[in-house]
Image (cartoon, rainbow, N blue to C red; front, side):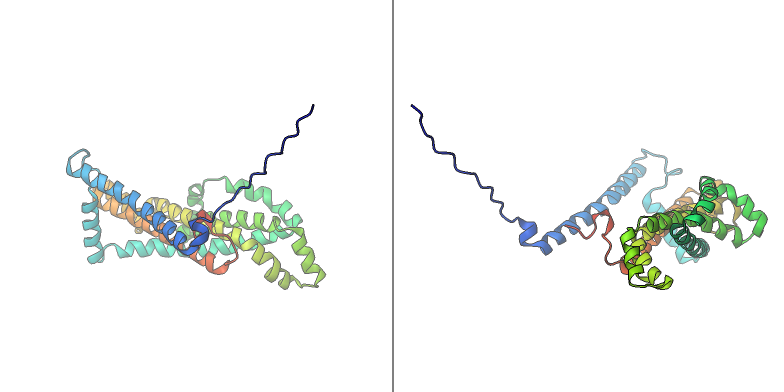
Amino acid sequence: MTTLTKPPAESVLVRRPGPRELHPTRTHRRRRALELSLALAVPVALLLLWQLAADRAWIDDRVYPAPSTILADGWDRAAAGELWPDVWATLKRVLAGYAVGTAAGYALGLLMGSLSLVRAALEPLLDALYVVPKLALLPVFLNMFGLGEGPQVALVAATVFFFVWISTMSAVMSIPSGHRDAGQVFGASHWQMFRHVLLPASLPSVLVGARIAAGVAVLVIVASEQIAATNGLGHLIFDSRALFQNDVMFVGIVCVAILGVLFSELIRFAGRLLTPWAPRDRGRGQS
């Protein structure tokens, strides 16, 4: 005799909306506040530990001055007008070299990404030059431009060029062929194809490379100023270290860090204005 059993009722999974769905704005604000708190807490904690180590003589404050000493010395030099000439010298070299390198890298990257024959002709040569340490080119630029601003600007431009060239060429090559086909179907001219297809599709990736290049440009100019300059933050750091003025040396290092962060964030901000359709990096603006 067969016994009939009633099949078990199907289980239903019910998911109730959480705070993210119910209050997206409030959740986003809390997340941003937490991220900002962590971003500030870590460097502040390290500075307090550094200050404590200097006060308790855990470290030699003649070699590693306390943050309070560095801040006081930097304030005094800024108030006396001794710091700003070096800051301005470094800044103008970075801006000039960055502008030249970005323009050249974007133009050539766009050309090589669009034309396979140009890419086949130039890519091996540029790949070989890319792996050459850029500081090794400083003697070449000194021979070409002599002493002065020319070698510094050329070195920054050469460094920035490769970052922007690679990101631009890769971005143009990765544009789906359907985008180009659509432009050709509608009879777009070369300028219209660039304006409405190539530029919007490639610009987010190009700006990522430009932001990386901004930080590297600051690093390169500081290293170059330590070798072949009579002013600038790099020269200030190197010269003060030679004179055992470690507090002044750390003032220069802090200025370089601030300059690099501000320059990189400026490029990031410009990228957000130019490409509002692109996803934000690092998860910023996302809950």
